[in-house]
Image 1 (cartoon, helix red, strand yellow):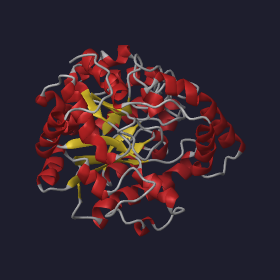
Image 2 (cartoon, helix red, strand yellow):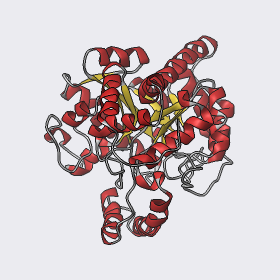
Image 3 (cartoon, one colour):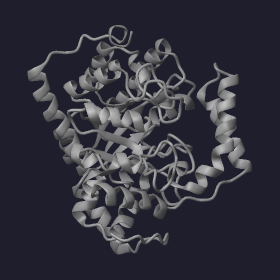
Amino acid sequence: MTNDTRVDAPSDQYLDRAIEILERSPLIDGHNDLAIELRERVGGIGVSSVDLRGRVEGLDTDIPRLRAGRVGGQFWSVWVPADLPEERALPMALEQLDIADGFAARYPDAFGRAGTANEVEAVFASGRIASLMGLEGGAMIASSLPILRTFFARGIRYMTLTHWKTTRWADSATDAPRHGGLTAFGREVVREMNRLGMLVDLSHVAPSTMSAALEVVEAPVIFSHSGAFAVNGHARNVPDEILRRIPANGGVVMAVFLGQFVSEAVRRHVQPAEGLQEAFERDHPDAPPAAAREVRTAWLAANPPPPTTIGQLVDHIDHLARVMGPQHVGIGSDFDGGDLLPVGMEDVSRFPWLIAELLRRGYSDDDVSGIAGGNVLRVMRGAEAAAARIQAERQASEATIEALDG
């Protein structure tokens, strides 16, 4: 590996080699927000009216571009606005789950449902894209372990403990801390996730929450879409003191693509736009999320940020690999979850160019196949093995937040 940050396009030999690797090793993207993007596009109903079998302008994701990007597995994000109270977050979460789960049902020739590492590999071997789901924000379980178990039964295979807001039991990286990381109930949530075999996702959470979770977990963790704080000091990115603990845990940090998390210059540039968006959300609590994003989009249109490059994205991967080892790095794009994507990484068709840049920098074929998807498959198998062991040792938790947190 080198520290070369040139942004010229890789030569054809690297791109050809990248495609060859992705033909035999699945690229598994840890985070894609197509479900909520579709919902907002059609006003909340009738998402099947958008035909993903052809190119869909205005989206980062559709089936032709997933095919062109050699995507082998996709974690679809089940997301609702983080400021929704629990009693409103839960029903919307179930609606979003229905949308994400529906991709495999509507397009069975393109997608196959997968809930285990073996199932991912079987779907990939069939020439289709493994369809997986993650719950992006712990508020959606309404502080209830039975609801957590219901989501697992419906196919959710990871849960991000928080989103942008602190929950009743876990501190977010982008909100005022209240719990010193995890409450007693929060720790019980983590233990129950391990018992189920649901991956504990530490993207979006405060470093104190990351640390608390790492002290509790009995299985490898993931960061489904995070960057390196040392490269860009965004609160959403992972500090080195946490990265250094990941090898002992066996987990994986999946590099995010969005410009404000990748580029320090972009992070600083967009702060006024984010302030305007937050003010709009405070003043218009009942407005749809798209309305708040339009405020941000309008400001950015009038004040364009500097471009982000594939090279800057790979700088994050380089740092993650130096601190943890390449076997603990993955890919978590956040396509259809934001704007300001790197030049040359505008949609899901562009994954081979990212892989080619890794090869150009000196990563081996084995390293690259691991970063593309092999590392997260290993983590999934670790969580599955831990769940089998834990289920032989203890029953489902009957704890409540009232009993544990008062």
